[in-house]
Length: 152
Ligand code: IDP
Ligand code: MG
Image (cartoon, rainbow, N blue to C red; front, side, top):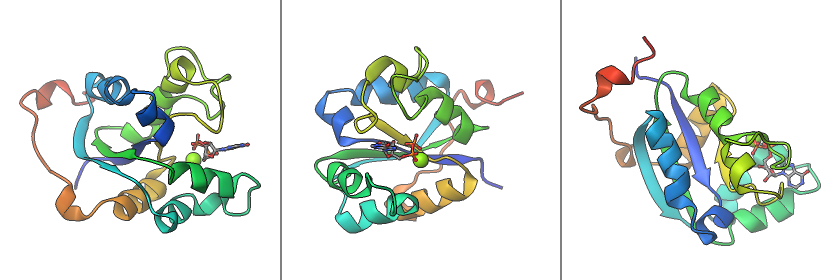
């Protein structure tokens, strides 16, 4: 059985503000394993599918327009409990309510420019990974320090 994986994306504001290394480094330093990484300007079709759950919300068209406005850094990270842990690293949706120490708490102020996306559950993670990545773009590998990364 393969370990848990999640889909993480640095949104166009994070890329434009030069925060890619800062954000990527937090996941790396935490001890999660990088499985896939690419920069892509998403199509409207891709963005609409990705945010399909929000299609009836008033901010949907702005959200899709924003996410397709420039490069997004799309990633897959793997590790024990990575889905919920990544959500904790990211922080609350509203950056002004996100705890200091979280990515949004430290790096953002605006809900429409909250720098990063992370899958909110197992089904969402599987859906989003398959939506953004071909399986050939995902690398299964064993870090040399794997023993130090296990939960117990
Ligand atoms: P999440 O990114 O923390 O999972 P969701 O509720 O899934 O938050 O919303 C997806 C994205 O839509 C948010 O990250 C944010 O950029 C945007 N969004 C959510 N609620 C609002 C809002 O009330 N106004 C504007 N944008 C919003
Ligand atoms: Mg969400």
